[in-house]
Length: 252
Image (cartoon, rainbow, N blue to C red; front, side, top):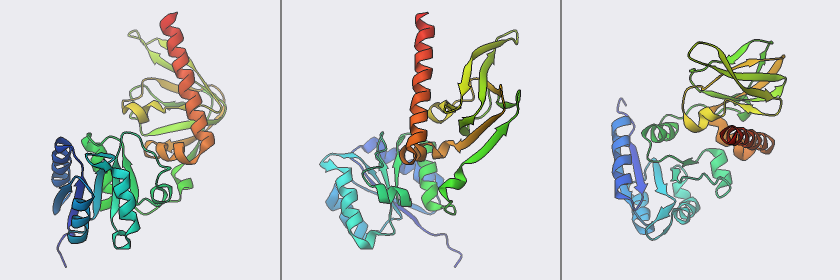
């Protein structure tokens, strides 16, 4: 009764360094943990049948074929329905297993060599949180003119899409004077770079007019990209404009 549930994992990869690193991360961070490994379908099938792991972590590219092919075979076997699947791929192609990604059974691990990324991914399997309505992930935020959205150096936990109004971004020089970086208008994202680089805020952003924004947790950005085309388009537009401004500044 008082025993901890066993956390059994299967790593399918041809990269010995990755297998060892993932094994070390799993055993150090998850209790009562046992890790098996394989590199092709027959090894995987044998261990699925005899060990029945809680989750399988599988490389997209394997020495003898595609990890996607093995995932497809796993999904066809009903006795594997309770096994979670983590696809280790630098590009998350959610269209391949659309239904399973939406249900949460399949996750893409796009940073398989970063310890915290592995921990965050596996924690959703070992200690799943109550499923939320996707609409509940996003909150509406309102600002009055002059009100600060976030400050330079703050932690980056949220990105925002501006529904109404405009904001300005600035940083401070060594004397404490403002260096204006530009304005953010309705239809643009702000604070999105925190999702990509994991760095503290590089600027302070404050409202010029009355502003309405939608706050999006960094953990939900990928979901936005694949499920909300209009928001994804706004994100691409914002990143494109940032790149143009950076190029213009460099070329004078």
